[in-house]
Length: 387
Image 1: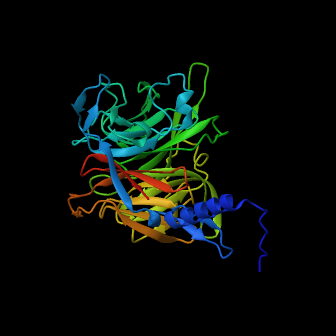
Image 2: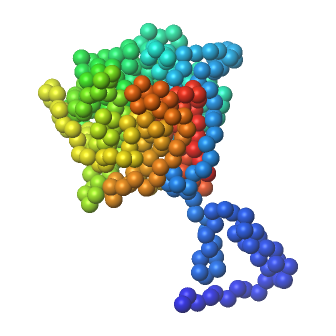
Image 3: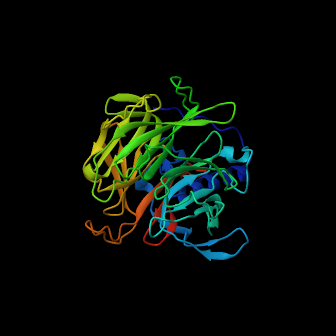
């Protein structure tokens, strides 16, 4: 049994104040857990099972333009990206700040043209990108370069990947014969590929042929060049295959630890797949048809459409297109540890009517509680799931 420590002599009134403060803290903190020794500590919600509040942050259809006027734009919000600290040190820094959320508007007819900024994860939404821009058409998913603060966006209808600076202007417009209606987007956090001299890489997926590409960024005297390699091929679906992706430095799948892992959703087979060593696999012109390593397959996945990593425990968070559920997967044990409905509108699996969920991002608050941001295509809003 643990021995009790003796308190030093304290004046009676001061001791009473301390005791009352400790009792009040324990009574009124819903997340306090008591030790057998009589102390207490705060237990944050680190999985989706501890989150019970869904709130709308703001509309992506009615936003504020650069002149302070409310405007109506072609909505259908899909991608979400949280601005990193480096947006403050970028040469083209603008109003974008760390923690701001950027949402893409895919558009009702796949031809949306706007990116919407939510300062500090709060509404109302503000126009982020400089418009008009011929290269911005049907922006789907996006990912920040955490080293430079640029935002990379996959444009479905324009068939390109655009790089936006923190001030909303376009830095680069990347095209490639490998692109076929780009969809997903992920960043490798600056991992180098010594084979071709790249300093970092992005990944994009293609709806038209269910392929996965890596875009290597290679520095040069007159600016960077971009080399594109196909690193994967998943099962195609009628009407297009919507493959969203996420990158993680390491992932334990069952009893094995893998490094430099690109995760991809296989919606036709209700599967999550992994591509280890994603930065260096296939640095040749031959198109790889690898289907990756199966991380998880089957229910409760139901046409998975959005994916991110739980930053607190490394679990995989996925949203389903066919039932509007959020699912948390522990890859180490190969099990779903939580399911949470985010939109109760029923989904028609044939037409897709009612399907709401695509974009997904996760962070945590100052007390260590998980926060999950998601877009709702039924309401054209950015929303948050929290404690």
